[in-house]
Length: 363
Image 1: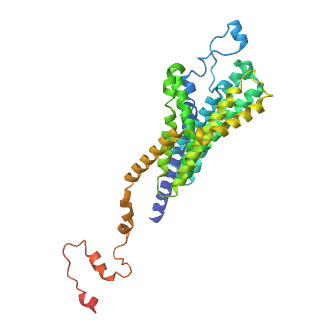
Image 2: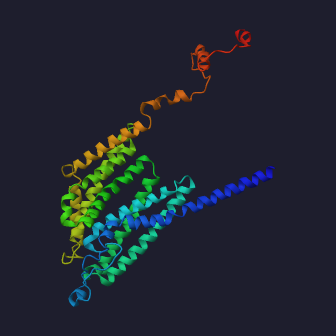
Image 3: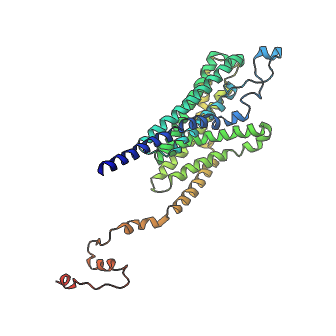
């Protein structure tokens, strides 16, 4: 009988292991789809570049092609900021595929590996297609090998950094998760801007774009709410998260400034060093206190405090302090309180039963 039980338990364990392996596989295609469909959504809604006429002078002059060419990613210097935003947000969204299986133990590493593989496959195909389309059909400036190499580097770095931050958000501890989510919150604000422009057009979206910065504040506030207010040392992490938001926003401003100079007839490549130094000065100026978007920080603090209080109430609030007394074993007697033990043991009995050993206990 023991042999039969062992065989059945072994079969059950093998079936559970096989089902666990099967459940991990959807992470790969889900992460790849999230990277491109979710991250590149503003570019997809814009028609993958087909709504903008291409700048190949020969085609424009001859009239052989008046429509834009399809590219899975915005591989032009004019949309370099959008490319970085897409890849950063895409990495964060793709990492959420790990939550599909709620990994524990060794499965965390396996799920993260599959998600990373799905992202890299989707990114490799999209980047290769976009680079090939730009090389064949793009303008003379964008088709230049030096320019194309720089755009490709932005796409690769954005993908890797976004994926790394996303995995830290999904798998890291509370403080590490919050610090990794802070730059993604800044990128999310730019992603929402691009989405609004793609849906409504630039002219009609101008009135809305001034309010999309609130998205960064709300996202950062949710990050702070996840940290909570207890223990008190978590408040240092709150300050660190807000500093990361400020630095990431300043970096975004400096990158946009640099991308504005990556155009024909701007002294490239000889003037590239001067443009980089100028963007560095813009970054230094953007991180100064007088240039901070304090309204975003105020929104983040308000959402963070409110969210922390809501989570605290949902977790039981001050009643959690009485948990140790409930978990104390029956009959345990604190030091110096021996006579109170019989009362605790008979508290739940409606009427005390006759004790046949009462004489023995008295002795």
